[in-house]
Image: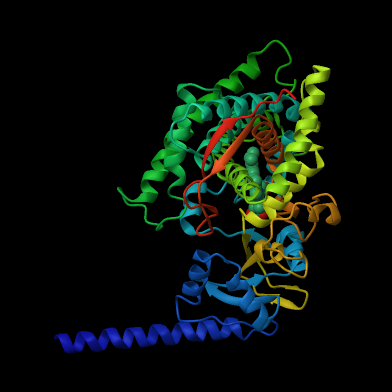
Length: 488
Ligand code: HEM
C-alpha cells in the first residue's frame, strides 16, 4: 500500500474511533438525571482547563466556573475519565459515608499498581472496616497519645535546636519532614534512628516518586523503579513483622496481650471477629505498614510549613498564638510538671490556627470514588462505572459558608465552634474512610508550633504556595531562626 492509501486508512480509523467515542459519551451523558456539564474535547475532555487552574493561585476557579454554569453538582471529563464533580457538602457527605458500599476508591493506574489490592487505601467491605477500626482505635487511644507526646516533643526540640547553627536559611518544608517521618515510622513499626530508619527513608522516597507517573512497568521506567523500591521495603518490613510474631508466640509473659506499641502489634494481635477467627496475613500486614506511610508522609509537614507561612503574614495571630503558648509554658515551668497531650490539644487558639491552616491549605483537596451501581443523590444520578469527585476545596473556599474565604482568620473558628469534622470542614475526609491520623496530626502540629513560637523567632524570605499537582511552597519556605529569651 502506498503513502496515500495508508493515510486514508489512518484517517478512516480516526473518524470511526471518534464516532464510537462520541456515541459512548452520548449514551452516558443522556441517561436521565445525570447532572449538567460539558465533557469537552474527545479524549482530553476539559483536562487542559483543569490543569491550568491548578497552576494558578486560585485552583478552585475550575470548579467555581462550572458551579456557576451548571449548579453545585456537574459533570466534566478530566485526566482521562468522565466524572461527576460535587461541590455540595451534603452530596459529599453521602459519598463519604458510603452506606451500602456503593463507592470504591478510584486512584490513577500508577497508584493502583504501587498500592496493591490489599492496601487500606484500596480495600473495601468488611476487611477494610476491620483494618480501619484497628488502626483508628490505636491512634486515638489516650495511652498511645500520652506515649507519643514525649517522642514528638524530643524530636521537635532537637530539630529546632539544630536550625540555629545553620548558615543558610532553614527550608521549613524539608526540615519538618525529618520530624514527621521519624514519628510515622515509630508509630507504625517502632524503628528508631539508625541504619534501618535511613534505609526506610531512602527506599520510601524512591517508592513514592512513582505515585504519579505513566503506568508503564518496563525496566528503567519510573513505575518499575518504584515497584523495586517497594520490594526492598517489603523485605525489610516483613522481617520485622516475622520477628515480632515469633517473639509474641514465644514470650512467656503476656503473649502479646499487653499494650500495643505500634501498628504492627495492633495488626498482629487481631484475631478477627469471634465468628471469623482469622488473623491478618503477614503479607497484608507488611504491605499495609508501608502503604499507611503514604497519607502521613507529606501531609503533616505541609500543614506545619503552611502554618508558619500564614502566621508570618498575620502578626496579630502570631502574637496571640505566642501569648497562649507562653502562658502554658510558664505554668509548666512553675509547676515542674511534664506536658500532657491534652495540654496541647486543649489550647483553643492554637487549635483554631491549625483548623484555619487546614481549611486554607486544602492539602487533600478532594477524594475520588467510582460508583459500583447507579445511585441518586439529591436528584443527581451517578451512573454505575462513573467516577465521582467530592471536592473539599470548593466547600472550604465557598463564601456562602466562610466569609472572606481567602483570608487567614483563625478567629472565625471562635464563632464557628470547635473544629469538628462536620460537612463543611473535611480536611481529613469523613465517614467510612475518615483519616485515622487526624488526632496524631493535630498533636504533632500543636507541639511543633508550641516549641517554635515560645523559644524562637524567625524572619521569612519571599515565597508562594503552589497547588498543583500537590500543595507546597515554591521555595520550600526559607526562614532564618534565632532563639528568644524567655526569662521575663
Ligand atoms: C494534616 C495531615 C493529614 C491530612 C490532611 C490527612 C487527610 C486524609 C484524608 C482526606 C483521608 C481520606 C481519604 C479518602 O477518603 O479516600 C485520609 C485517609 C487516611 N489517612 Fe490521613 N491525613 C493526614 C495525616 C495522616 C497521618 C499522620 C496518618 C498516619 C498515621 C494518616 C493515615 C491515613 C490512612 C491510613 C488513611 C486511609 C483510611 C482509610 O481509607 O480507611 N493520615 N487522610
